[in-house]
Picture 1: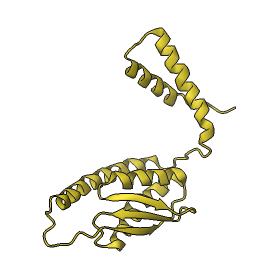
Picture 2: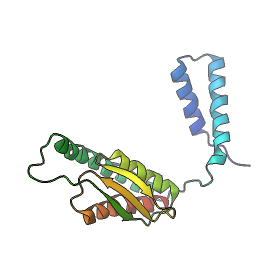
Picture 3: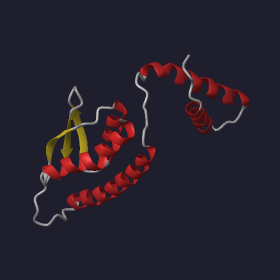
Length: 161
C-alpha cells in the first residue's frame, strides 16, 4: 500500500478554506476529503517520484536564479527602451546539448529558463538530449551554452540525479 503524503493535502485543504472564507466544520471536512481524494487520484499520473539528493544545492541555485532574473530584467528593459547603443540586438534559437535526464530536473530547468526574461524554452528532443532555446539577445552562443550547463544544469543534476 502506498503511503499518502500528508503535507500536500493539508496545504490544499488550507487553501480551500482561505478561498471559501469559512471555517465551518462542514467546510473543513469537505476541504480535507477533496484534498486527500485529489492526492490519491493524481498519484497514478506521476509514475516517477522525485529523488532529491543534495537539497542544499537547491537553495544556492535559487539565489543564482533570482540574481539572473534581476540582471535579465534590466537587460531586457534596456533593449525595450532602446538603450543598447549602436549594438545590434540579435534574436535567435540555440540548441543546447543536455546531460540532465531526470524529468523533474528538466521541469525545473524549463521553469528557470522561462522565468528568466529574454529566454524561452522552445523545445526538447524526444530523448531529452538537446534543448532548443530562444534568446532575445544572442550575442555569444557559446556563452549561453556555458551559462545553461554550468549555472543551471550542473546543480540540477546534483539535486535530481
